Image (cartoon, rainbow, N blue to C red; front, side, top):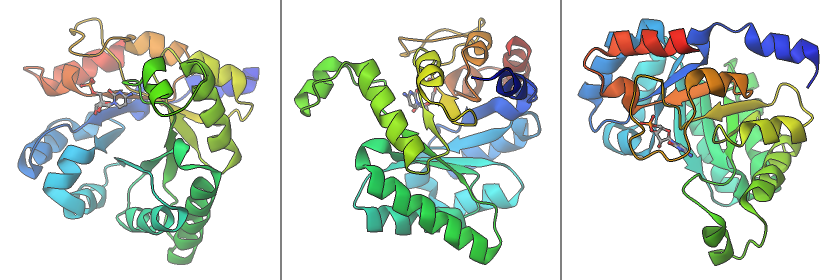
Amino acid sequence: MTEASKTERKSVEPKEKLIVALDVETATEARNIVDEIGAEVGAFKIGLQLFTSAGASFVRETAEKGFRVFLDVKFHDIPNTVARASVEVARLGVWMFNVHASGGGEMMQRTAEAVSEFCEKENLAKPKIIAVTVLTSSDEETLREIGVERAVGEQVVNLARLAAKYGMDGVVASPQETPLIRREIEKTDFLIVTPGIRPEFATNDDQKRVMTPKQAVASGADFLVVGRPILQAKDRLTAVKKVLGEM
Ligand code: C5P
């Protein structure tokens, strides 16, 4: 990484880097959280639970209110299906969404092209497309089960390279993998989004390999996804401010 890109990464306001995971059951709960802390965070992540319960209309509503939405739907299907579904995601006005890099180069390339073409035609900002490499719930045994003989770290780098080559804007990675990806991927503006963040004031919940916000930023992450330490705090706004302070 060049000195210039290091400086660039650091110069972004902490608030812009913080993505809060809206891991709740209903649109009503999510709406309350958005209203409560929206002004102090960079983006909200809508994952499979809330997307399935509250639907595309909640995504559109949140984006139309002016909040950045990261739609964490992890698409993995044939190239044509993922490309077409991704165009619909772009139509909702999201800021970021993701696909599985293990869907392959053609799937990622066709998706990137279809989304770019659509956004250009409709005069929309192109969402950032992020690839999932190896889920942090997977270990070497999981990889063996599906016929992958590489070590986890090697497979992460392999898929991150594929994602960079086929038009993805970045990857989701655990904080532990961030330095490895920064070292191995030459594209200096390649984005790294990291969950598994635990501020100094919080417990680890079920996350095993965690880093503090400060460590995650120092390791080269561009965006930090934080869920429970903020969602379950008695005073969410104070929790957000503490996380920003730690960054
Ligand atoms: O509550 P917590 O801060 O652990 O939430 C982290 C968010 O990031 C959750 O939405 C979780 O699904 C997601 N995530 C994760 N680990 C990954 C990928 C996504 O914790 N490897």
